Length: 221
Image (cartoon, rainbow, N blue to C red):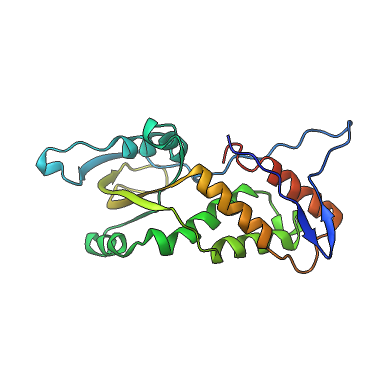
């Protein structure tokens, strides 16, 4: 597990990791949320290369069954962080164009920033962390990440079953499998932390909250 503590330098003052008082409750970060709504039940009508006799790849089955974390437990990806951008709709050609135009080099900063943002998941992050929060997301979005690669892509044709609010529906879902080595990601994230410049300077409590996040950043990341 990757762990690092990054000092935050603001206004010439050095802030190290926060050590809580003995009487204070332990601070535990929430895991990065993957979905905010309950997924609808569906069946798979068709998928990429089905006509040729191919089966659904293991990473796709794992993702559909249990989400991103299940994919990261597969032997092939245990040393990597996995990102799976997806797009769905009823226009196959438009979705295929989206897939063809995807660039791991150009699109990864957005993927990284979104997952980093979710790591700071609290109701009011701008209040909890002050300008640190916005500065970090901006720095992650602007960083020149290297090492991310699109390893595979896949599409499925879904038939959603009716529920209490929605009727039966069919559409396509395109998935792209993007990976980056854990050591490479953590090293580059450290650089992002080092280069960011929160303005205005967060207050003492906001700095302490941000440091607690950094101490536990990769737990359940």
